Amino acid sequence: MNNGPRSPQPAPPLLRLYLEPESTVPRRIDGAWWPRTFDLLAELPQLLPGLPRAWGQIGSVLVKGALWTGAPGRMLVCNQVVRLCRTATAHAPCTIVLMAPGHGRRDLLVVPPEATERAADRSWAPPG
Image 1 (spheres, rainbow, N blue to C red):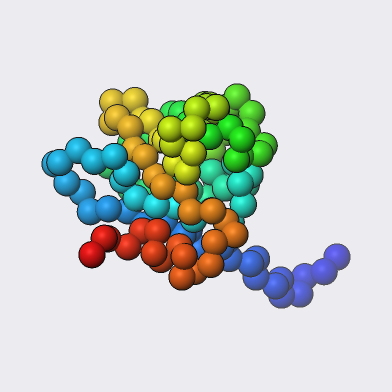
Image 2 (image 1 turned 135 degrees about the horizontal axis):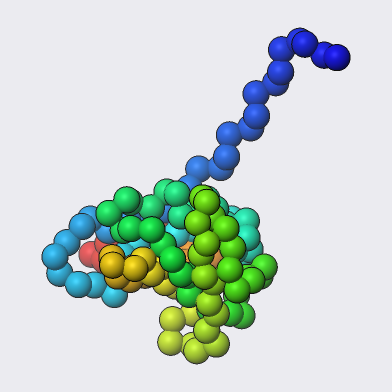
């Protein structure tokens, strides 16, 4: 039996998320998320706990089906079941829609994982 010091567990990667300031004016995009992969099973457990509490408990997620892998019908994230839905429509291929009962819908622009830091910064920089 080894009772010596244990090496620390590696820290989870930082969540790459930009959120627009809260506003009473409705908007189409609420922020931007830069995942490290297009694997929902790997990425959602990092995204959902990093969202503001005011957004409520996310009960379902809608993604563009062709981009994402590993998307079952449901998954357990932070001790809650999250329903995963795919769409084949091309109207919003670079977004993820987060829905919370009683709190509404939030849309995040998805920055492609392969994007450079400069490209990611430009994608969520305010125009002007």
